[in-house]
Amino acid sequence: MQLIQIIGRLFVLTILVASGLLVNRAFSKVEAPNYDFTLQKLEPFTPGKEASTIPNTLGKADTVEDNGDTKILRYSISHVRYKFPVYVQIKKGIILDFFAKLPTYFLHDTFHQSLINKYGKQSKYHRQENDALYVWNDIENIKIIYSGSCTVTCFPNYVSFIQKTNKKGDYVPLVQKFSNNFLGKKTK
Image (cartoon, rainbow, N blue to C red; front, side):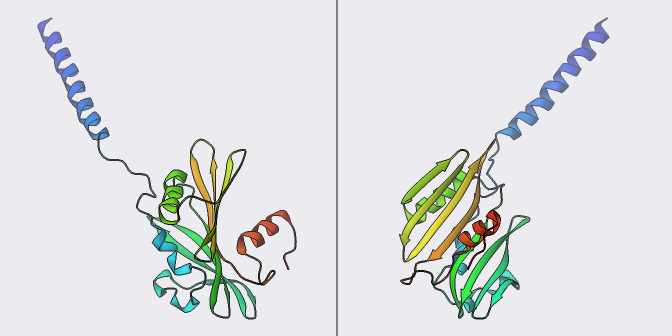
């Protein structure tokens, strides 16, 4: 009978020690996957810069559309072990705008806060159901559009930087082109 009690106590002690080791590991620092993502990774695509300044380290771009002096190129940005596309519209060697489809494993709150930290509070905000759109109207002659969604967690959809021009209809921003294509409309 004493042997059974000793074995029982050893068993309980083993379980307590093992669970204690597991619980202590739960107190370790946990960071979201995009805490180390910085907006600097998107800076090479800033509108107004020359396309030739995009670093070769980003790899060769795929041509999505080529209309003579206006081109749309797709780059792949690597973060952790994932890649996400960045579409860049270039006219006569100058970047007009870019559209980055952000990974859904990013946290919306973290990415949105990084935009606020760098550019200040957004000019416009629109929410429809689970989607939100944030617009910064004039940051150094650039319009910034950011979209995020929420389901179980909140995540970013895309961010787009658009160069403001003096002439209306000079070019169609990528965010508008992609929206029109999604809706089945023809873009001029």
